[in-house]
Image (cartoon, rainbow, N blue to C red; front, top):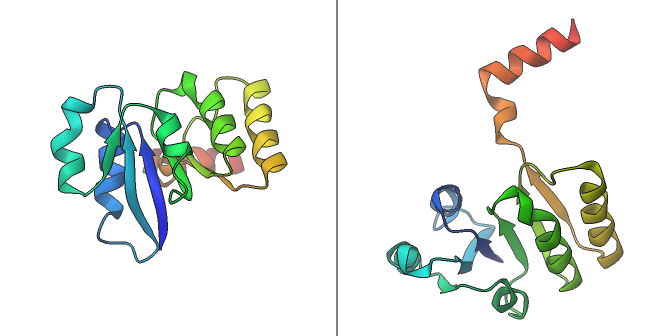
Length: 138
């Protein structure tokens, strides 16, 4: 079982946890980070997630193997780099970065640290995206 942390326990972070917690044989959230912990405490208690308001708490926890980022886009690059430097695999909700240079920095940090980097692209399954792909292919 992979032990994970969810960083950003807002609406989308909660959707991710709800989709996985107690349902996956491979992934279990043990920690969470929110800048407003009081607003999500009931949710994290329900899912037995230890909550803090600081990414460093997650990065310093040797039990956490992967960090899932459901945070504002502008924070992704620095958070990915910090996770990589801490030796944590990262799954980042899209977009990966706000520009090509930051995306390259994120990828390079993960490659240098030898950690995996995954990117959430759930919209690729939407009918509108399939249609767009069809138009591009034509």
